[in-house]
Image 1 (cartoon, rainbow, N blue to C red):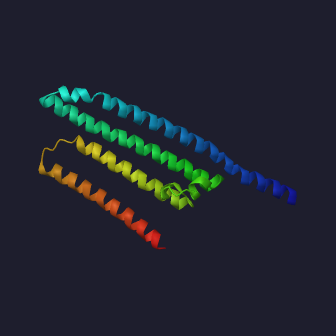
Image 2: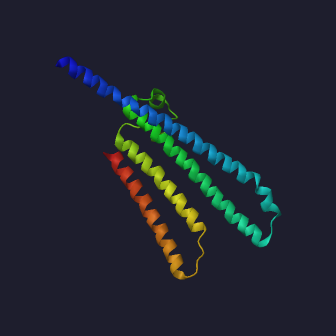
Image 3: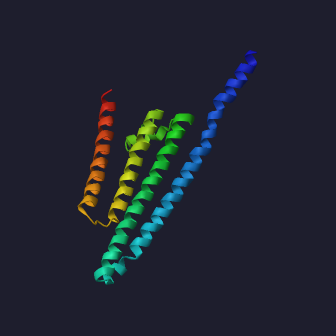
Length: 177
């Protein structure tokens, strides 16, 4: 009976290696999203000459479109970082510590993950940044027709500020303990 238990536990322990598939897929997705964002950035930069030659309403429309495009590029890069952090976190939690990350003086705290809570907190921060970027993207396209519309925008900004405040307050609280 002990032999069966040992074999079962070995199989159970090694089943954690299935996470490697998620690590590789997350990294591949990060590379894809990073590529898309970089192509978008290059495309936007290559069209800057159109802005210089545009006038009046065409220039304003092009400016609005460019700012929206920049926000989308930032959103793409942030999403790629979420995928990288996710894959690093999964690897560190289920497979092995990444020695280079632990020993590196340049490694950011965000890339060293010691627990599932660490991974969750780091991902939550980047997701919050993505939501802020999305909010900015939508706010940039709003057409204000009344004072109530401006009040709604102000309320949204206040809620984002509150979310940032609470995320930093929680981080400060975690650092004290």
